[in-house]
Image (cartoon, rainbow, N blue to C red; front, side, top):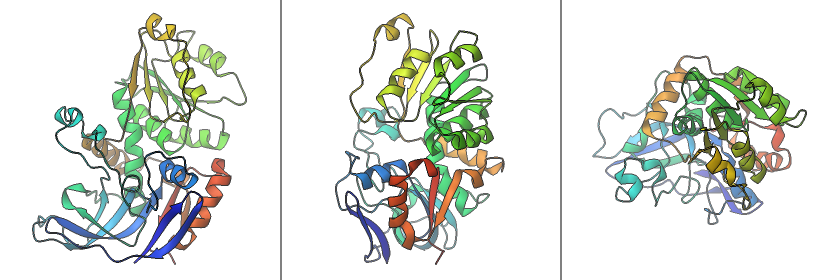
Length: 341
């Protein structure tokens, strides 16, 4: 089978690999669509500390069942389209004991700590499958990245009466925009790219702020009548935006961090105490987040065409990674279409 492998930072190729072996509790999947994630870009750049090389990337997977092991329930029949939950969990660590399997101490994500789905065939345990017959293959491959933002919204306990600021309108941030708007909150999207802000508005942002063109603190002061937002979701991963989230949020507010800052962050810690803030991390997603995203996409109001900015064949994956590295502002979501020639 053909697979994309990142051999080392800045070097990727299409290679031949054997089709994986099917176990009793496994399903054999024919890969149909796989989205590129920011973590895949970090792997290509050599900036992902969780990755060892060589690595097959890809965890945003839409596929068709082509074979099943002897212990797989009849529900998972040949020809059914599914998406894959790409995380593992040990079941015994403190997170798992609290049913927070998303942040398992020993989690391994497809395409990060283990080879992922950017290959023509994939074998996974049947318990990692999710079916959503109302969704297209393009939508199925969007579910997992959107769950990350939906989970951050849940971590922030977003409610209809809240004003929520989402900093960063890549695919993950757009999930947070859609998730917060879906709860009835007033959402203010922040980015330095006007084209991404337009997409954020389509996803449900009531207001948008180009923080490169205007003062973010002053604009938020005006929009919130000096109070500040109730919740700030940080989806960029820069020290400056980590600090801004704490500085901008209201007294007794909540800050949710999705991104990893690429360098140590220095804070004026008085904000933590004086504002009595809830500062929350958000990692991966839970089964209920997948259900919420599937329900949201099933309504057919999410701007799929605006979010998927590139759809490419596997043969073009390496060249597209190079383009994404050089011009990240030109992409929101890239999907590899395995049916394309």
